[in-house]
Image (cartoon, rainbow, N blue to C red; front, side, top):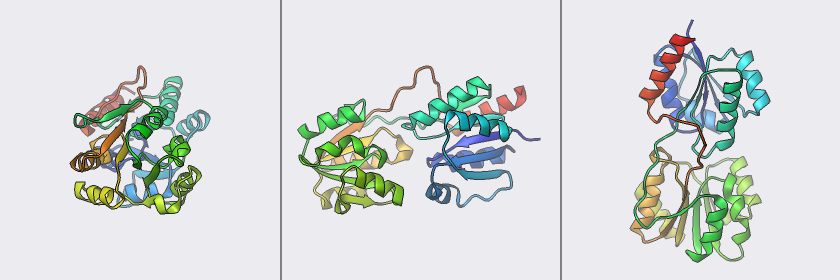
Length: 259
């Protein structure tokens, strides 16, 4: 019987990893946090050995899920900034124990002149010195860290379509006319057009990697002479990762042969 893997997904690499593992004969349970995520990431994959659930986890619920589903291995392919679920998954797998592997897309080094912040709070403190009209492409969840700047700066947020994202942006003080509900991918030219249309001075983005679309938006900003404020990835102590599908397959096969 094939080994059963829990794929913690939520990024564009999720379906790529799923297809590769299914081709190798593994059985998969993939999880995403929203119904939109299930539709847009896994809607095109129909396979008898794949089930896609919409759910989040606490340490307790993940432990129960792994035991109830008889999961043999956990593949964590969540976003580089999704620190909470990564920490939970790693800790629970160590406790049970169940093999755990972290897939993290490779980072990308932006052009010289990029301004860095280690946290969202640090980015908020730097922002007023960089410009007046700001475009955020950091997701809706973290906009709350910049809510106190609305009376000093003109802030715009590009977020994913969906009521949950819109609610977070509104709660962070963004009026509807400054919220752009758009679904990627965005080309370099499309980013340029958007920045020109809204007369943006500063782009605030995250070090989310090539697959996250950071290259196109950062280069578009530099093309137009904008300031770019990049929030570095959080560092997870003692947690190693791989960044290619080939490495994932090799580790999963090795785990299959040793369990």
